[in-house]
Image 1 (cartoon, rainbow, N blue to C red):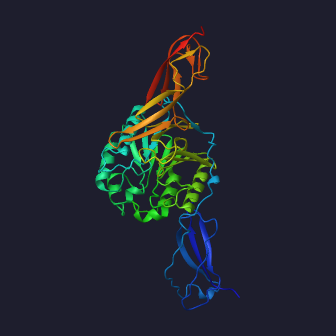
Image 2 (cartoon, rainbow, N blue to C red):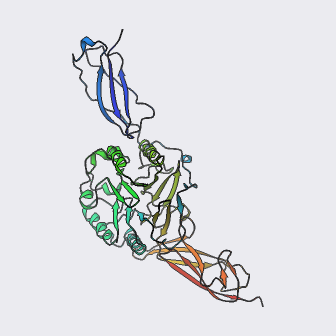
Image 3 (spheres, one colour):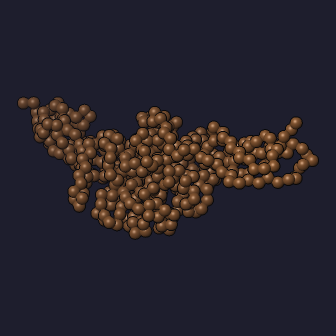
Length: 444
């Protein structure tokens, strides 16, 4: 005997419409509690489209009524961990290249910059974050570009006075800066009233040259958690799917605050791992169309680039935050430069230092012809107002260069004296430079 069925239809975050059965036997007249699991490959967040009854008896068509009370979808736990080995730390996709040169390339089709985490406060006008942001602005203006991106937390709170300070600083940029909302910036402004009024909407798209940038809000740990505070007020994922359909750009950048990947030492605040997986699937979908897709985030005060399934995830939160990791792990003040051409994207990591230092190992102002030159370089950042000093040995992923003033007298690779004479060994990051003189003497 056929039975009436209760069904529902929802749309997942990739735009797929999925039908589920609540019951295949709708034959009761009182209240009944129903609960069903959603399919395992559901891409959260979801939107319910409709509930409907499938009637098996045509004589009962359009007769009767059905009432619902407290209909809701329960989302998965917020922060389960991903295994860290799901991310490759070494392999870059063929179209992405690391640029070690200190001097900016000749003008590419599109050039942009990324930085974050300066945590500027009115109570600390000469704080480290303020000093570093000034240096970032100076470096970007020197190199010239089409636009800049902020990964959030430029202020220490969402207070209007702090936001105005940062806005005035960013006004000194010669290019437009597009900002993402950080988790610290909702403190003191939980309803997100100041930020869209002073800085920018919580989510929007920017089309510049070969690039489309999708600025997203995950400041509460997920896109769904932020939806109730969106300005403009609309479901963020549905807006994103529509915006992706409309863009014709070949390079797509997803910009947000929390890195949509799992960090092994993050215990309090991070990105909802299920929504992070959904963003990754969305990025993969676009990459399979032949597009180049980058994800840029902040929150963590380091530089890192990780690759998962050919999708690079950049973390750039080193524009003034407290440095909590070693330089090898990206723990230094910096901003990132991207140059986009028709065929590839190159990136350079520009460190922020007060000065550079060249150190001989051991100190030896004279070397003989054919003798090995031994020295190392480091960057020094000082804040006299706070009596802070940071020394960073120069190594990858910092973009820098060694060279000599006269390659006929000495060379860098290998570091060897060639002919007698005076020569300068130069260390250059593009924004900072230092050099030491040395005398090459003949064997006798």
